Each structure stands twice: as C-alpha cells, then as structure tokens.
Length: 262
Image (cartoon, rainbow, N blue to C red):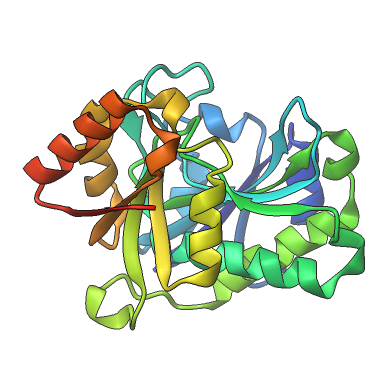
C-alpha cells in the first residue's frame, strides 16, 4: 500500500512545503497543473506505484480574503456546483482517521513553535476538487502570500505530512480503538465547533457540510465516501436553520445513522 504526496508547481505553499519532505522515503509528485483540476492521477504515478494507493496527501496553499494566518486540513468534494474543480455533486473519499492525525499534529507543531503562535489550526469543510475515487486529504498553509512564503509554517506542514506518511492507520473499525468516526453538518467554513470537538474528544471527522453549501441530497454520499464508515452524525444545531435541521434528521433516519446535536 502506498501514500502519495502531491503538490502543484503553480502553488507557492506547495512548493515550499515540498522542501521539507523526505524525497528518499515518501512518494512525492510535483505536477504542472493545479491539483484541484485533476480528473485523474497523472499516469506517471501509476508507472511507479504498483500496489494499492492507501492515501493521497496534497500539500497546498489556503487562500482567503481575510488573509488570516491558518493551518488547515480537509478533504475535497462538491456539494453543489464545481466552480473550483472536480465534479458537481460528487465527493472524494474522506479518510477520517488521517484527517484527525493531521489536525492534531498541526496543533502540536503550533504549540512547539513560538513563531506559529498567530496561526489558527482548524478543520475546513469539504470543498473544491479534485473528486478522485481515493482517500485524499489537503494539508494547507494560508491565507495569503506572506504565509505561503513563511518557511516556519511550511516546515510545520511538512512535519504533518511526514507524520501522516509514517503512521500506519488501519482503516478497519476493530483497530480504531476508542475513536468514533463522524460526519459533520452545519456551521461555517472553518467548522470551528467540529474542530474543537476533534481536538478535545475521541472523534474523527470525515466529510463536513456547512450551512452555506447545504444540500440534504448529498448526506448519503457523505456517509458512503467517509472511511471508516461513520457511526454518528454531529449536527451544529445553531449552525443550521430549522428547515435544514428537519431535512437533515429525515435523511439520517432514512440512512439509519445515529445523530447528535452539538
């Protein structure tokens, strides 16, 4: 089984993060196109990887108008249109345990490095492309060019990726110990409530759907495209309106999945 690290040569942060990756151990590919626009993995990956691809980690920039210093993690996919790559109403596979490990390691890196004290460590909701049929996680530094060129932040992201490559996360439920896998619905783009829960409880999140991009028709795909299979849905109760809450609960009951409001 193989873990692949991807970054784009068009991405300043991705290029900088790649400088801190051990090219002698990890399978690292720099590609000319934007990762979010991939319809499939580059053929050269398959020329090298002969066994199953266990995990794709994307070293990437995060961009926002606020320019807030951010270290963030998420899986890709689109709940509606595909303005930022990928396919409409289609999700990639979200590896919840890997997402959890990445966020926890980002938190450790920030605590150990005084020069990262102004960075927020946070989950992001599921968004943008690519929509590949593989477990895939974006590890990002943001949110503007100053941060993308901050080698301290990029080194921290490199250490997060190294941690993800080094550990062997067995995706079978029996090996998850006490970690409960969840999907999240509601709230804002940075999933602040779910981030706090992950960092303080034995919870791992796969796909997360925000209020602004709510689509109850995608709940079944959130469940099927999260691994291991989610055992519960956490609903940011105040992060949805009444109609959205009702539609969410109806879908979850049809799917026979436990839910809890938070």
